[in-house]
Amino acid sequence: MAEYSLGHSPTEQQRLQRQAALLRNITQTIWRRAGLEPGMRVLDVGCGVGDTSFLAADMVGADGIVIGQDRSPEALATARQRAADLGLNQVEFVEGELGSWPGSDERFDAIVGRYVLIHQPDIEEALLKLRPMLRPDGGIIAFHELELEARTMSDPASELVLQVRGWLRQAFKFGGMQAHGVMDLSRCFYEAGFGWPQVELYPLVGCGPDSFAPAYLVEILRTVAPTLEKHGVIKVDELGLDTLEARLRESCANGAPGLVQINGGAWARI
Ligand SMILES: C[S@@+](CC[C@H](N)C(=O)[O-])C[C@H]1O[C@@H](n2cnc3c(N)ncnc32)[C@H](O)[C@@H]1O
Image 1 (cartoon, rainbow, N blue to C red):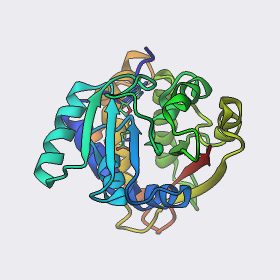
Image 2: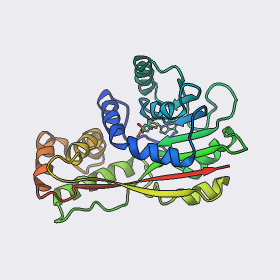
Image 3: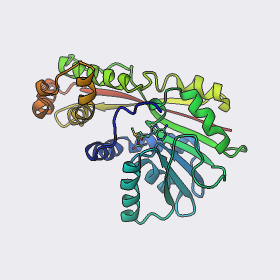
């Protein structure tokens, strides 16, 4: 099993929920354009603490079914508690590896996911495993992923933003994350037998004094800092993590974009 660079600590689980709020509209657009609609039976692979499954549940409505699957029992415990708190009856969470059948052998109308293919050592192989679970007559596959190699834009350039982004990239690579998560998707979909997918890019831009970007970058850095220290890239004590958000905010004080994160969607219908 490949190393998962972000882990499942309580802090990381909370970070995922804040990140979900930032990404919700992009994910919803991708899944809607892919054809997700009321009444469908949907598998959400790598569901984490449940945010993507809750969004899918919104989209399929009370007559649909969503099964969220993840390998992490800690994340699933949180997801189940949140579903109970929200009174969502059409969502179920199942522990398992991507590609293992979750529950019954009944096929799905749609298989979806967010920020999960980029964590697979071989995206094509992951898609191949998912294909038999989809309805052969019109089943939909739709993923929201991240392009790690896209440059952070900042004008004038913020050295601090660039440095932090550089560290994050390194940490993700140590964790086996795919650098070209989005740009490689069309080839992987095609090779896995889905035909050529529709691929679209969606930039997430943080700029100005209230930008989400500084806090977002620091939260991820906190999560991966031990990995970076283990590989000799940084010394956590010397990072000044407690003041980093303020320093990043100041470095973008002219309102220039402090973060342009390139998100992408890829989808296809059998
Ligand atoms: C970055 S999180 C995204 C969670 C959720 N999709 C979201 O956007 O909020 C990735 C999740 O995928 C899970 N994951 C990664 N690879 C997996 C695999 N091969 N099988 C099952 N779960 C996996 C991790 O445990 C983690 O919870």
